[in-house]
Length: 305
Image (cartoon, rainbow, N blue to C red; front, side, top):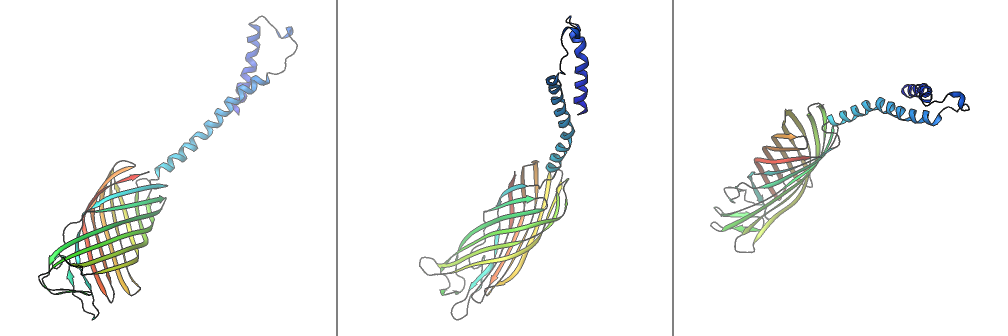
């Protein structure tokens, strides 16, 4: 407002020499009204400029503060390729409560590295993080029976060819709270809680015949864990550990998930990662048991927007 009044005073004082220079004096014309329009035009732009100048810095500072928080309203997507090796054993009881415990490698020929796609979609709001992730494993093997195999209602003599198909899919939904974080550099340490939903389908087939038996179970497991992010320049080290044990509908199940990775972010909204991941899944009831460990390296990227 002070800038506007100063402009008004200067405009009024400059009017006298301007009219004298054109050969006119104040006595030649009747007294004129104050130049209201001129004063308003001169005052309005200066008033708006002064108002904008007074408010520009706080507004810019607020936007900068928001941009300095790397997790404020941020959506990120991480597609990964995982190459795990599967180890473990499986059994299915018959009507006489008898079953043969079968090792994936030695008895069923399931031991090769598998190629799996992992996906993680997250929404981050300050210290609150929401994740949806999952994977799907499809593994198979063929092996000559080195013992008499009893798998449910299927009996396979020594020397016959056995085909094994294992499908294990997972959908994970969890919430993470960063109870300790440094917003300037992105360091985070927090706890997670959520639910891992597993679908297990495993079958043995006597090759060349329609004879087979199958395990088909849906198992939800609540989980809790710890999440760590440690930035070093453009690099980022991430570590996750989660798991839990549950007994539900006569099924006892436990789950363990641990991973560590190092990523490189050449720009704020894009990065690449590589690391190692291990998952342990164990489920059993009065009818079946399934114990599997998947472990191996992974590579992938990250897109943030």
